[in-house]
Amino acid sequence: MTDDYELIDSGDGRKFERFGSVTLVRPCSQALWRPERSAAEWGRATASFDRIEGNNWHGRSNLPKEWTIQTAGIRFKLGGTDFGHLGIFPEQRAQWRWIHDTVGGAVAAGRRPKVLNLFAYSGGSTLAAALGGAEVCHLDASRGMVEWARENAAQNGLADHPIRWITDDAHKFMRREIRRGRAYDAIILDPPTFGRGAGGEMYKIERDLKETLGLVRDLLSAAPLFVLFSSHTPGLSPHVAENILGQLFPSAALESGEMLLEGRALACPSGIYCRAVWGQKGKKEDV
Image (cartoon, rainbow, N blue to C red; front, side, top):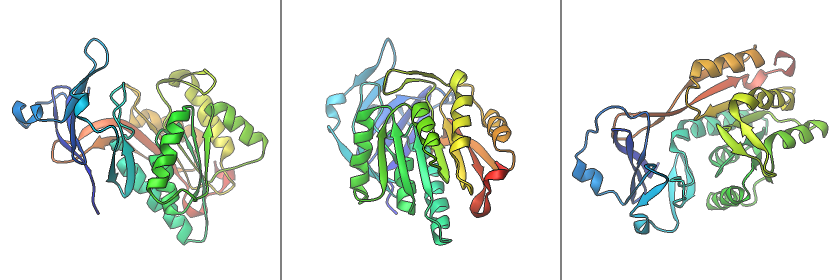
């Protein structure tokens, strides 16, 4: 299967990546080792971005306004943003494959899971679940990102798939869903370290994560499949995530680790994940 992403090199606090025909150099605080490729090779990147005295692109005019790549079996529209993002976090590729395969296993067993994706950005997890056969609810506080995700869905032949597209504050939405008696078989979330909701509500992970996960627990169906939590918050380790999810979901099997950027170079850690998994025979009373 074609994969248009790879990590070409990393080191000295930077990463050198390829997204289709476009190569980029951007910051990577975990890359404390030496680069393996020459400075001349790094210098041939299409463009670069740094955060020295603000957010700075170098060679941004060399970037296409938009371009499309395929990775982990999903097509994404990309474009450079003022903050150095592109509309994709490729360290999530292993999670997207896992979501697709886990949902697909449930579908093969005769279920059509209902999946909620919170803080959903450009929709990688939404599309992985939908391509696996799930009904999905996609929620993000940014209307622009929700529209970007809808474009990605169309790129993947999912324009008519049962996906609810919601622009809202995550806590407000979950409380409404609970009052309405709705439930989800799987819930995915990647909350920001700091962010604002659709109505300007402030989110701080160290203050709000316990409430977020409590609402997640209350929204799970009577036979849940999984909860997938990921984070890019500095200092939040896989063990910390296991402790948090283990207290909330004591009967679930826990799987955790670092998310990695991978390719030709040394793998570069970029965030963590933790999965609480019940499988096909999970029961709500065990949550």
